[in-house]
Amino acid sequence: MNISNNIDILSSNRRTLSLVIPCYNEENTLKPCLERVLQLKSKNLNLEIIIVDDCSKDNSLAVAHDLERQNPEIKVICHQVNMGKGAALRTGFVHATGDFVGIQDADLEYEPLEYKELVETLLINEADVVFGSRYLRPQSRKILYFWHSWMNKALTFVSNMMTNLDISDMETCYKLFRRDIIQSIEIKENRFGFEPEVVAKIAQMRCRIWECAISYEPRSFEEGKKINWKDGVRALYCILHYSSHTAPLPMQLLLYFVVGGTSAIANILLFSLLLFSGFNITIATVSAFFGAAVINYILCISILFRHKAFWNTPFELMAYLVTLLMMGSFDFGITIFFGTIGASPIFSKSLAALVGFFGNFFMRKYIVFPEKNISQL
Image (cartoon, rainbow, N blue to C red; front, side):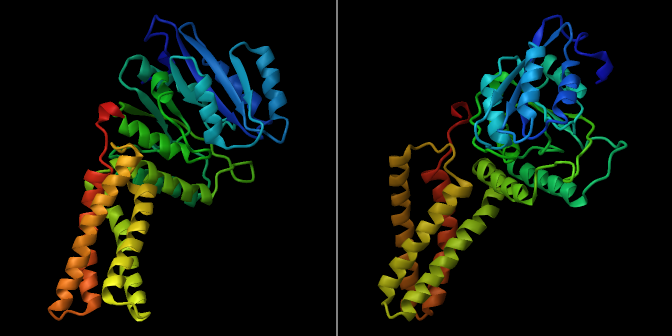
């Protein structure tokens, strides 16, 4: 698409674009950013600009209120305590009333006028969500941090494996939504974990997603960039937490090697510890199994399952107890049986743990945490 063709060619109906601008200590860039954003307004496109000041320590809020007085398109909302970018976006999305809702950082790393191309894709009804990708086309660009760029690409790669999408830039700021889409999503992340969270949830909604190439002028940390390696670790957790329960089956099995493997190792270690402490094999077997089951359940609800489970909590717990008793019986029976035919206790317990690995995964997936149909999500 050609940006110069503009939105005017595509629609005779006047639409409204709501841009949510999270702001924290951006007094130097907020005004020039808004001057660029206001240029998006045309005869066929209204603007609603929602600045959410996240308890800035500098003069950002005063600048925002001054802009609000001068421009009827601008609305300012302020947080009383600093909560993070995700929280600021959540606040802005609630107040958005436009046909389309987008995100614009206040630091001018992104060119606001390029939103025209993203909006065009929604206007011709080819997409429900449009991402502006920094990696779609070669171009002149400012060279900055190698590891920061590759962290973004690595997180995008892992996210794609979990969501089965082929996005080139999951971490991009420029995400444009139909308003009914973004307002139907419950955003939980307060910081930069918003990006993988919202990508996971729009993938689960089966939204039509498009990408448009955009330019990017990154800031250095010395110039005020706020994201750091801790946010990268959190993003990886968010990818697993929000995507794993609907990831392709091979990816779920791969993750369950971590969950089930950790539980199996705990099972064997607890069993060995109890044996060496003088407990008989029956008590050691049962106690080790239930100890490992607690670890398994905690890891399952933290990473793999439960997000849109079919059962409510009481039925979920009942289903879990049933599968626990079933796998406990298998665990006990296998351990005791191989012990009686001459196998060593550790070998017997290890074999039982291996059977339990696969049994627990499929019972958790299809009995304890079965997913609702997509129409119910």
